[in-house]
Length: 92
Image 1 (spheres, one colour):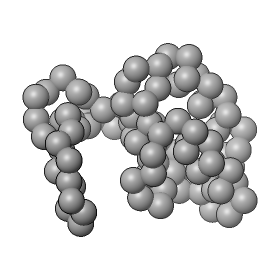
Image 2 (cartoon, one colour):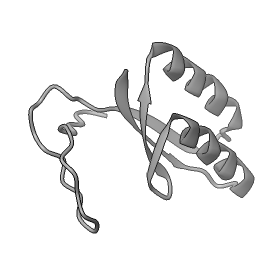
Image 3 (cartoon, one colour):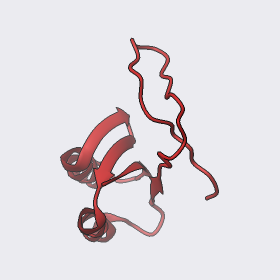
Image 4 (tube, helix red, strand yellow):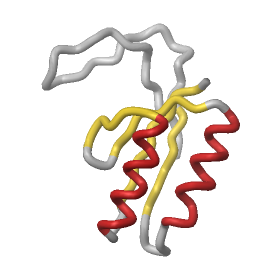
């Protein structure tokens, strides 16, 4: 399994709700439109299959792979944090 950040900017409220419910099946919400998801190859394909038809032309949706190879900590402000593996996002 690999870790991804899924983020979206969806204009239509019903579609936004449907997409968030799908993402909640695969991971946890970090912010209103940002999720951390853990997916294997088949689940990634399934997520893309479920989300794609819900997107309008002007909507934005990204699935960003997270590099876990570095031995660093993840820091979170605003709540009592836990130690996590590194989050390295390179390129676009």
